Amino acid sequence: MIPIAFLSYTHFDDKHLQKKISKFHERLSGEICLQTGDDITIFMDRRNIKWGQSWKKRIDNSLDGASFLIPILTPGFFKSEACREEVKQFINREKDLGREDLILPVYYVSCDILENIERLKKDSIAQFIANHQYFDWRNLRFETDESPLLEKTYERLALHIVSALHDPHDSNPQDEQEARDAEIAESSLMNRKITYESLMDYASYMYPNYPPSHTWTKRLLQDIDLTKYHKISEIHDLVKFARSAVNKYADEVPHAFKWGTDFITKTLIFTDEGFRENHPVSQPTMVRAHQFNSN
Image (tube, helix red, strand yellow):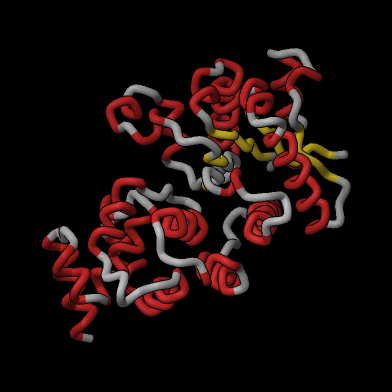
């Protein structure tokens, strides 16, 4: 098999998680093969080669200069010299190839170094990863193997890799969002009652490149009228209704959208006067909300 990507992880994490990372590797490799019809795989175990020149040679000889690094982000990952070195290798590779899409982080366990701004400022590797789009697996890792949501997310990650292989610039964010809409409409998530857990899952699924915020999800629950909204499907209807305006705001003021939860709260601010009165709202966001409602 041709190694299309390299999985960067710590063996301790895989052992402690009862080989869930190995299972992730197996399922993602299989999904990529399914989507391409090619006999390709994800290289996983660095113990099979010597560290140093052999590893660098393996990277340099990878598929058409377009192999990916898939770092499995956990607290242990950032303390592993081997994992950090692999990221450095691919940082240089991206620069050499003029690419920005060869590192595809999977956020597997919450990491203080990514959430604590002061710690983040002191770690160049963490900063680099934080600036990359990533897939949030922190809630998905608790899903059962038979979970339709988990299966569809494997498919979406595999298609993302395949798309970047063919043309790093041909992905269409609108098409990806529409695909997520279709997938989530068929999932059990739509019928779940609005709770902390379901809102975290919804934010993770709808905005995979942004982590959900524990603090702001709790505040959202505190400020939303739960006699008015009962199921996640009702929140999703508002998200689709205000998506164009919210996404435009996010493009223009990216610092206001650090979390996936921010997209949900901004949606509610734009569409629900009662929530707008209960929830802390910055002046710029309030102006945008009034503009949205005056159109």
